[in-house]
Image (cartoon, rainbow over all chains, first blue to last red; front, side, top):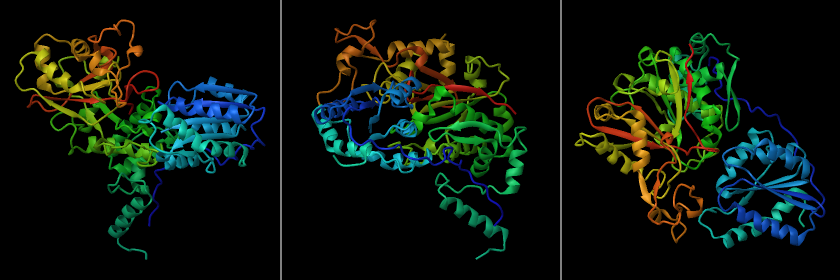
Length: 93
Length: 75
Length: 352
């Protein structure tokens, strides 16, 4: 067969490694990022409750994206990346 | 997915929750963004018609998985 | 088994592209070296120039990759500059293609072409404008859809979560019928010179056709059109979203003859497509609606009979003219919502 061209774009991002896991959640700063779809706040409310009851987190930082339709804005990403040890994001439906 | 993967790449263990309807989209997205091993935590679909209590139940059902995702072990 | 005859090789290549999952379900034209050279000769840009990064995967749409998809779609080389401009337009931040590519809603990009390029490339603006039969409309729209899939990564059922989809996901490309437009066409409305060809993108549903064959007044036609627009997205989705109205030439010219400008048309729809608040409140079984505490200050939230507009401003309605000159029909489509995090119209010049 003659040469045929590929219509797809190679993925821009090369393979990377996952972050190291934490031993536990005691005394850690937990980020909770609400993607801002309806009812996601209830989900994170309960997560926050159980987290506080089961562990002694140092802090819980709760933030909400302005819209679920785009990645989180720079300032939210920067703040959470700086201050959090672990991140939970919810809820895409 | 973009956010969760951003935080993973920044060194912060992350757990992203999405409903079961989004599992193959999430997989495709993770691959495209260079972290094919990044798996979402699947929550039962749908969410939109549920009451607040029912949504709390969804969170309870996967809380253990969230902890396991960021600590690498069952607690 | 190698095949000797060129015809068999071609058929094998068509099957190969189906198997690779890079088609829209219809056969594509295999992008061979010869076809690619012809296609790339139609632009002075370098083949490796990156025109845009296509969401959601932010794949690089180089001139070469655009050309591959254009050949596959069946484009003539002369169409390439329009496809390149279309890629730039759809990746414009205002369109929020990232959101649209992953939505469960039906909205998909509609491309509207203005200027002399319509005649140069035989882009249909008239009868059957949303239908089939014109190579330029069919293949330019198709190339752009293939690019959204193959370079952007939004494959239906995977990242593209549209619950229903609509036929515009095969191709959705029209010319505006400027010659029948009694007002300023879309590109002039957006500040371009009449002879500057442009392509605009607006993400929306499939066309909803509205008939009004009897009214001789602008208001009469707009009341019928407005009653149909009133249920866009859902019958209780108000004070939200944006819409496009594609007026058939008979309707547009009747309205202008009756003294209405394009802005008057938008304003009339904004002022008259309204429902009383009590009909729009969220339903007891959970059905969405307008929430009293979300209303802006200028509406009286305490009054159950406050008339709530369908859109939050006349600018939320785009008006263009297209379609045949026989038949008193217009169509309208619901967009993917305006404002932060939603999707707006974007217009870019076509450069040869």
